[in-house]
Amino acid sequence: RKKVTIQSLQSQRAAKVPITMMTAYDYPTGLACSSNPDIDITLVGDSLAQVCLGYASTTQLTLTEMIHHTRAVARGTTHPFLVADMPFGTYQISTADAITNAIRLVQDGRVDAVKLEGGVEIVEIVRKLTQAGIPVMAHVGLLPQRHIAMSGYKVQGRSVESAQRVVRDALALQEAGAFSMVVEAVPKELGKYITDRLKIPTIGIGAGPWTSGQVLVWDDAMGTWSGHKAKFVRRFADLKSTREAGLKNYADAVRDRTFPTEDTESYTMDKLEWARFI
Ligand code: KIV
Ligand code: NA
Image: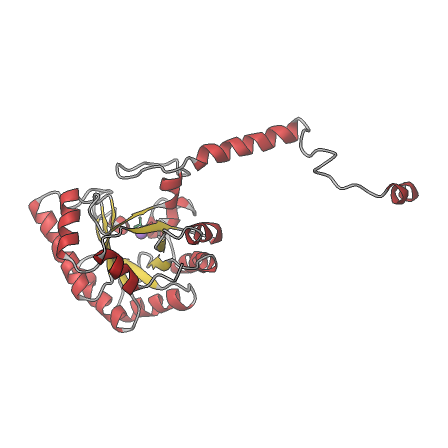
């Protein structure tokens, strides 16, 4: 498949072909996304913090750690458009700092675009990044990097005031130049309303069936995550059971000496060489 572009994503939105985005965190998961022609966008989400690095929240992830992983995903990426989250603290200090850090993600991390969480308060940063030629994917609704300030991972936009705030954020971010937008954990009605109001594609996660596309965290979708399962998660595979069974089979086989076999899983020395050796 040909490389996905911002333009091809726009065409997909116009043609109402749902956009598929999946997260990846290393070379094998990046390669897996690239091996499926129906995956449009690979996201190195800062969910990396929890699902791969064992941190309690995304706020603990550093830019250096993110770049280390985006480089690995990039080595496995072919046609999907490659996006990385800007980690917490890498775009709040100043616009100059945000541009410097986004350039590091593009140059060292080898991503096509960056994703930033936030609303009207980050609009000037989104504008500057866009003007610098760095495509920005916005992220509105539930903002996991602010889970402490928001007192938990809560559905957003359930009241009139909250819904108006999310819509205002979405419109301002589009106006600032965002090429697409993740809409996380909002009522399905609001997911549809925002998608209809915007000209750019919306990628929903817990935002109902009517956004321009969907995204899930790899470990949620593949069933390798044993932590909390949000309402919006569907397990499309059960790799955890498969993995546990494989590990048990291996340990059992070593313990009962059925692995390796003498015949097919071992090397043999030439008989004459062995006779001379012994
Ligand atoms: O970090 C992440 O994986 C994300 C997606 C779930 C949108 O931001
Ligand atoms: Na994220």
